[in-house]
Length: 264
Ligand code: KIV
Ligand code: NA
Image (cartoon, rainbow, N blue to C red; front, side):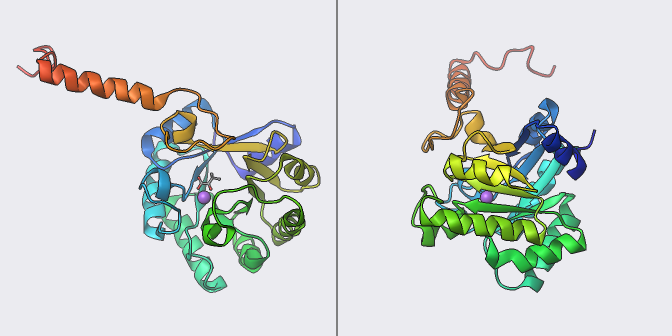
């Protein structure tokens, strides 16, 4: 069964949690759909996790489209959201509409995600009226890393009021979902309880309507950084390392391949 906007809001109304995984490739997307993940986000975190960059700022629209096509093939029925990369929607409303439209047309994604509040409100309004569902992203917003000054909690003290205002602005513009990243759980709880939209938290505590984590974090493949909110469900890096070690060893000792693994 295809997951749609209606499916997501029905879950919200019934008090059932919404699950989202950020991932970038066909194989992991297939696994997500198989186990019933509601939404896949093709996150621009791929700049760091997939490409090994030190921020998300370098990711291009072409790269997002490339990864989203692969993910869609693996997960044809999952609700698919695409992160719009840095500078693909900030220059002007017209350019933003054109780029978001391109992504939806070329990839088969269901929605776009944009970082920010008041500064993107007009674009959000226009996209929603055209028929492109929009996910907002508030709190720590990686595309503003240079002004925020590093990874940190955003929304303590005076910053909380800004987020409350941005949240309301996004909802008024028509965003159906808002990702809250690295905000105090009390603020996320308050926003969730007063919301019309769906809140999805990452490092935003247990009270959001849904939760999102990056696939490579869930399976323990990211070893260099581990924010407090990441839960690694398996030691993926350890398992992969062990498999690779054995492959190397087997080739070097002649244990792989056997005749049975060869063509006659
Ligand atoms: O890029 C990403 O993966 C994200 C999620 C972590 C919310 O924006
Ligand atoms: Na992102």
